[in-house]
Amino acid sequence: MQQRFFSPTNNTDRYLNTLINWAFFAALCLGLFPGCSSSPDKPTPTDDPVYTLIFLDKTRSVDVNKAFVNRKYQQMVDEIIEQNIRQKGDKLDVYFIHENTSKARALNITVRSEMEDVSAASPTDREAAETEFKLLLTREKAQIRQRVLQQLVAQNTGSSNRETDIWASLPVIAKVNESGAAVKVFYLSDMIESVKGTGRRDFQMKPPKDNAQADEWAKADAQQLKRYTIGSPDITMVLPFEPNASVRENNPAVTQYWQTLFAELGAGVVEEQ
Image (cartoon, rainbow, N blue to C red; front, top):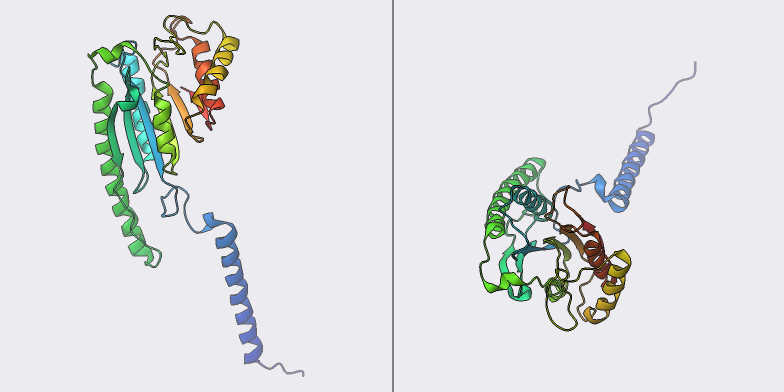
C-alpha cells in the first residue's frame, strides 16, 4: 500500500502563496479602484473644496414674497447646501443682485466641521468619528441654511433696486476662481439685465428678439467681458417664473443670451431651472 506523508514545508509554502496572492489583490484594488476601500459619498481629506456663490436678485422685478417664488427658492437653497457643504474648508458666499452687485456681499461662510483622521483607527473608533462628524456637519448646515434664508427674504427698498447688473457678478466669480476650489454659481434671478448706458444691455427696454440675436449679442459682449477669467464654474440659473408664464414674462431668448455668454467665457455646465 502506498503511504502518504504530511509535508509541513509544502503546506507552509502553499499558505504563504495564498497570503501573497491576497496581498497582491488588495494592493491592486486599493491602487486601481479606490472605491473598494471607501464610500464615495463620505467626505475624505482628499476631496477638493467647493466654493459656492449664490446671487440673490434684490431688484423690483423679483418678488420672493410670492408663494411660488418663495417655495422654489427655499427648496433651491436646501439643495445647494446639502450638495455643496460637505467638509471643512468649503465656502459659501451670498451676493445681492442690484445696481451695485459686485459690492453687495451679504454672507461669507467657511465650513468648520472637520472629520478627524481615522486612517489608523479601529472600525469602532472610525464609526464613532464618522457619526460625530455627521452630527457636527448637520448642525452647521442648519445654521448656514437659516442665515441664507434670512438673506433670501431680506427686502431692498433702496435706489439700487432699480437696475439689475448681472455683468457685475463676473469679477466676483473671477476672484473666487483664484482660490483653486471647484466653483458652483447659482443665480436666483429672472436674469433680466437692465443697466442704462453706452455698451450695456437693458433687457427691460430692449430684449433680444430671438435666439439668433441673443447669440449674436452674447458673443459680441463676451469680447469685452473676457477680461474676467472666470475659469470653468458650473452655473445654474434658477428663474422665478411659474410654468404658465408668458413669453413676454419668461423670454427664452434672454436665457439663451446668458447660456451663450457664460459658455463663451469658459463656463463648464450651464443650466436653467
